[in-house]
Length: 143
Image (cartoon, rainbow, N blue to C red; front, top):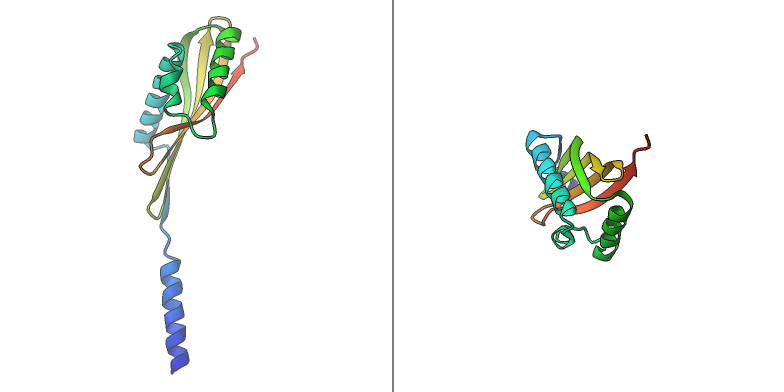
């Protein structure tokens, strides 16, 4: 009898421990719109050379000094931004128990004064934390 109670208790504990709730929503209209707004804001601040505003949403893995150097280097090599066109937006909204993480990945055509580039930027929003820029990659288009 005691064995059955222990077995029942262990089964009950395992049931509750394994009740993780996970869901993923990819490319919801709301998240895509938010990602495009973030990208527009980012490139507006970038074209205005307003790195102070951009620094507010840099991820901890990106130092403001390194990002500032990158912006100055881009300005030197490519010139000022003339045109920005969002080509592709992908999002994933992942909920695991009470934790929420939204990832935004955008591919952007950027026409600079001296160059045309394809750039990828990514943002992440975790729970109630502010949205953070966690990736920025630029590739010059060779014509």
